Image (tube, rainbow, N blue to C red; front, top):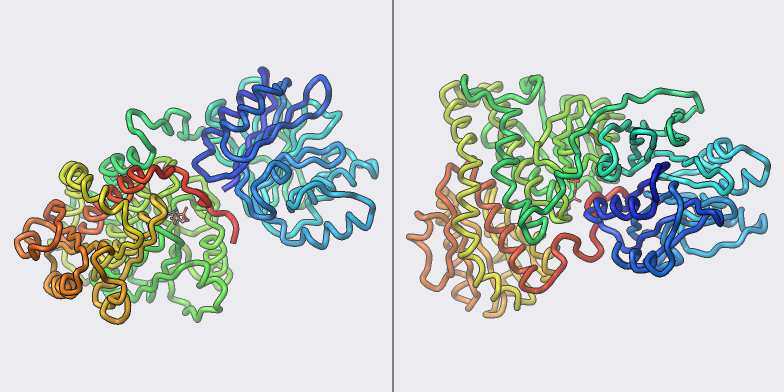
Length: 606
Ligand code: M6R
């Protein structure tokens, strides 16, 4: 979602802010802005749209100064327009904000009653006014900032510049992350390590409730009680180089091609190939777990749904997978032996985090399968189970999804062995099978990428598309449909193949492509019957299968053949053609596949 960069630097701030905001584009945004201390005082430039629109504004009205603040805004309160873009201004204060201030309406009424007037519809402007009101009362900047923070409910990461304080940036976090970057004679704040990545890889992550004052050489960090604290400075790997597109046209294409590597890296944390064992890093005892509660949103939820089938089938472990935003607000009946596992690429998704915290408050053991090692979830759970997909820039999740699946499959094998559902020989066989996955994912890319192009061209003309699958392929059908919606804006639905006759079959006609994901597993014959039902109604079937499945494919189906593989890793291999198809359809439609409209990479509001 929104992104923040603050620079107390040695060279002009505005171009550096732009460079950083470009790195944050992947988070999703609809306006952007920059403010700086200039010789004429505190000034700002803002634009609706893309960073290039902000650059166009800056080319007409350049912004001088070495101390600056930048922001990409994903609209929550008020339309995406210049007036609502950040930095927001009130008196001596310029402020950028990620998150939502829940009590902004009460605060705004109070400030209006006190004679203040507002220029925007944002909740952020309220905070700027609160800080400015503190300055007007004679408080020092840091005290005015803290006094404002004390009035806020909701989630925020904030960055503030104060007129008359040309070497100071104030920052704070509660609910949304904020990092402090340590440079050579320069200091930074950023919404994540990537934001400050072009300038430094030495960062400190603020804790919940922390606030900070940076100048050119120091960061003074305070906890929620106002006590001065130290936060560890780490060297992070999120270097600028890691988020380049290379020779690919889009990040989505690159990240699909990154998957063999992401899978291999993730496997290395969970498998002992020499002894044929599977276990999470630092081990875990699944024999004490009575029930598994998987919590996630979006694509990560579909990974969890597929894992539910695996944990129950392989390990006999009762497992629920639930959309975090539903779980959190429905008062679920959890039992003490439940292990709560969040699945999240970013580790910052507000709904998943809220569900996790709810479980923690109920006394459950918590774990997170997470791609961002320094994220809030990583820091709050009892057990961190990493995925090693590397930074995922495209808003559409691809390599993070298969990395999540990789970790979940490994965990299911570990649980199965520990719980006595499989013997050592079977564990070794499954570990060998998993070790084959990176090669088979690469082969799936090579085998299907070109074959899908004519199909993608035809599907790009469709208005609706149906995806069907059974078992683990049901989760993939849901994921395939989500990818197509996000990447091409074509309406798509995923369904359990057996459910089609209970309703969605009404949609079938010659203009509705039906994509059936069916490797030749024990559900193939049943899915084949569903395929016949579609063909009997003149539906345009696309069958994604393997060689053995192809031998039984009806002549009316257009088939795409993925590599033959063990059912354990079929979700990893069969995810690939679905991702490629969504990508190619999106490109054929001229859609912005890396940053689709209205979407954000990391959804940090509930
Ligand atoms: O960072 P997370 O894995 O927690 O994100 C969850 C969803 O927001 C995310 O998967 C979303 O659905 C993607 N846009 C899917 O492509």
